[in-house]
Amino acid sequence: MAYLLRGENGDMNNKPLILVTNDDGIEAKGLKELIMVAREFGDVVVISSREAMSGMSHAITIKVPLRVKLVKEEPGFKKYLTNGTPVDGVKLAFNSILGRRPDLVLSGINHGSNSSSSILYSGTMAAAMEGAINHIPSIGFSLLSFDSDADFSSSAGVLREVIRMVMERGLPDGICLNVNIPAVSAKEIKGIRMCSQANGFWKEEFEKRTDPNGQEYYWLTGFFHNREPDGGGTETDEWALKHHYVSVVPINTDLTAYSMLEKMKSWDLASVKNEG
Amino acid sequence: MAYLLRGENGDMNNKPLILVTNDDGIEAKGLKELIMVAREFGDVVVISSREAMSGMSHAITIKVPLRVKLVKEEPGFKKYLTNGTPVDGVKLAFNSILGRRPDLVLSGINHGSNSSSSILYSGTMAAAMEGAINHIPSIGFSLLSFDSDADFSSSAGVLREVIRMVMERGLPDGICLNVNIPAVSAKEIKGIRMCSQANGFWKEEFEKRTDPNGQEYYWLTGFFHNREPDGGGTETDEWALKHHYVSVVPINTDLTAYSMLEKMKSWDLASVKNEG
Image 1: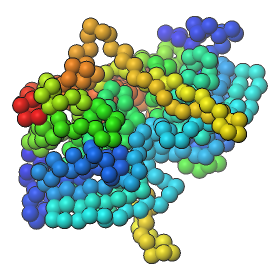
Image 2: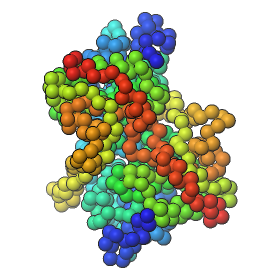
Image 3: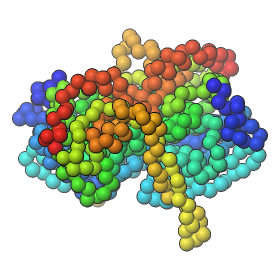
Image 4: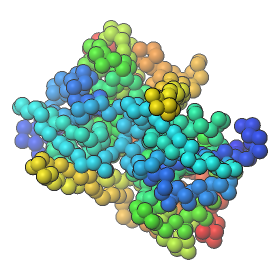
């Protein structure tokens, strides 16, 4: 498709326009790493928040007015600060900042895994999905380390490779990529694997405490539980990451379970009209 | 499957245990309507927040401790108030309140549509998806009216019908139902249709204002844009609702775009190891 290379959006200098965001806040090391690589591919506009927005998923801000502030500008680069969520930031960029449709949306690099069902809680991936809903090729990147000073030295090569492929081949409308990078050295990364989302969930173990006023409260803690059978599951992101591969999962923003839909058409639900 | 009717979870009275939640707050009219119908089917535990959590999507609360308070108890019924998001509430219920796995998770009735891609922003549907991730049959209900005093008189019959079918037939692990009800009288509802998620998106038009200190801010506004062709799309939820059918969309919590995954396996990404 070479969507990006056509410069079809009428940009004067024909450079791709790349929107970059994240959910770990504007000072996050992972964001800086992503910006560095993104700038090799085109003009970059960054929008992010002062505070981390982890766990914000696809949340949008309705009750509070949104603020946007240009905090840095140089040739081919602008950086905006917002009080909004990652999805708010993408919406603001599309509608009030960029001036034209971007050619690519990049989100991350998240500090921590967004593999398997973790994607559902992820602000990083929600930003990429918001790009996909708007039919912009979009990629979310995550490194499997929650450390704010994580070692991103293995990431640049992965980012370049995946971004290059998406620029060359494009992505179908409504589909974005969820890229997770094992927290190992570049030498230890075995390659990139196209994967499915592993069947897993977060098993919570709320930690119950009592505050100084004698009131109980809970902290959300938990661990990821992979349901894939031990011997199999070699097609999943969890398997790939465990074996030091980068996992790339194509993510659908159409959540319809089509195989189930076909079965459900035989369900006898016609009587509602008379019962309603 | 008759999952619910087996009482396999060891409940003394063999009644199904039903978790009910929403994202419009504990006093919402739609929640009360859902509770009324749910109690016809089993013991009901409600968890909700004081304030509305619309637009919270699958957000979870990490930075603030969670509080839970039992605010009402009578035979076969308990109601809890929490400061958490809808997904927090489901997690708290599963792990710290219910005492055993529930047989069903019901969310809603939302005041306002969650059809098409609106599902991605919806706290109502995120709660149902959280149930599905945990392999509990789960249903989210929404009425197409944002009015806090909306007329839910057409809803009870729909709810009974859909809940009864799910209790009889169960749902596959990882799949929940997104049920939207047109805001018309029971007589005007033409029936229930099994649908796919319409291809649409929210087109934002941020309203820019200036505060008393001369600072600019934005309010998030927008309108839904349906991409389905005018003549077609009769299989989608948007079509069904426009024609006064209840729409039922089976929703996958595995977001993998499998058809794209097959194509991507031919992508040449093997070189990353040497470039990393």
